[in-house]
Structure formats: structure tokens, C-alpha cells
Picture 1 (cartoon, rainbow, N blue to C red):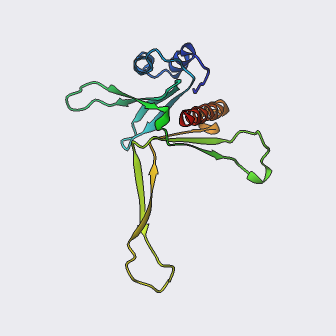
Picture 2 (cartoon, rainbow, N blue to C red):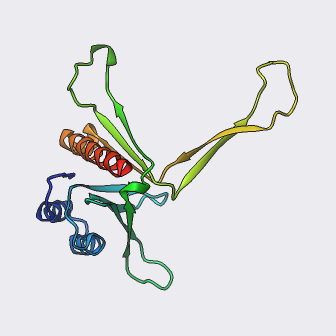
Picture 3 (cartoon, rainbow, N blue to C red):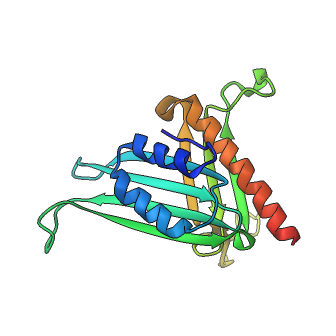
Length: 197
């Protein structure tokens, strides 16, 4: 379940509803948030399958405070050497709003020819970049001549890709799509205010 109701109590309720180690997740979020107020949030719980066909669960909590974006991600791990029982790891990152370089929202709409303004998309991907992680896509450069066999080196693009969160109506429900859109709007507005200071 995703939620963006604005309050620390609402955030805790959303974490509890996710059912994924709520005390551990809430403790990590509270620690990172400190005394700041909650402006908006998203709680995204997802299960994935690893190559051994085992279910791995993880939760991402995004919190917008007056000065920062908090990212809290908790993963579940199977027993391993030195760890006879399953365990979880939680990572929190606090990013100053002034450091956020991009807030990208990809919306997927079926049958775009009959799109009606105001109808929400069926899928949303929120990508936030603040320069901590980038990836490079390279491909051989060409000169446009199909008969040319000279080496023109490579061309590519560097893309900031610190966080990407995807929700869909089919997998997560229409409310989840709306909540992520609302969070993205609040984050975009907050980063615009931070850049204007």
C-alpha cells in the first residue's frame, strides 16, 4: 500500500499496513527524520523473485521534509555464511532539497488517442536524481554513411539514476498511482522553492 497523507502518524500507519518489519522500518525512518515535519511520503512494498525462485521482499519509504528528501530502503536476505537465519538490512539517505537535480515522472496511458485530461495514467515511474549514482549508455558512433567502416569511437549519454520507483494500477491499484503522482508533485514544488533560495 502506498500513502501520502501528511503526518508522522499517517506515515507510521502506512508503514504498519505494509506489514514488512514495520518496527524496523519505522525506527530507521524516525532516526533519519529527526525532529523535522513530514510534508509528503510514499511507502512502497514490493516482492521480487530471485534466480532460485525464492521470494525476496523489500520496502522503500520516501519522506519529504521541509529541507530534505529521505530515502529508506529495507531488504530481506536469506541465511548465509556467518548468518544462519534470514536477516534484513536497512539503508537511509538524507538528501538536501537543493541537491536534487531532477524529478522525472514517466506516465503510461493506454489508447492515447482517446485520452481524457484528468484521467490518471495506468502506470507511473518516478525517477529522482541527485548526483550520487549515474550510469553511462555507450554505443558505437557512426558518420551516417552505411558503407563507411572507419572507427568513429563511441557516443553515449550519462544519466543520473539515484532512485527509480515504479507503480502500476494492475499491480498496486489506482490509489498507488495517485499517491506517487501527488508525492512527485510535492517534491517538484519543494525542489523549485529550494532552487529559488
